[in-house]
Image 1 (cartoon, rainbow, N blue to C red):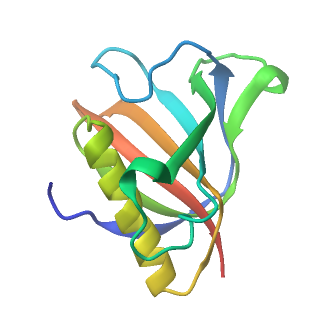
Image 2 (cartoon, rainbow, N blue to C red):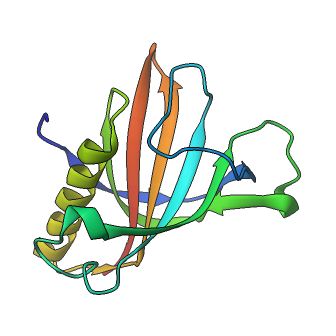
Length: 140
């Protein structure tokens, strides 16, 4: 896998997604549209410098699709706030996403940030290619 660039991102406005229950988080294909998946992280692994990849992503909290004109009161959201952010300009599988999530966590711990217990996985089509993005909330 290519070196992951991790940056701090201040999301000033939430992103909204229509709730969908039958999405497979690691089976995204070009043409599927913009999707968001929210995972809870294993509590014991969420603050380890070298967490186990297989147990790291615990529960899928929700999955959703971006839709113009959706009623925001019925949507799930990627909340506004501070995130460690990483992306790759390709669709990644489970193994690569888990590895990228570990790198994001290591960077946050190295920076002595208070990391949140959720991880957001977002897929979208941008500038002519598919993109995989990770968002991990933090506080300073």
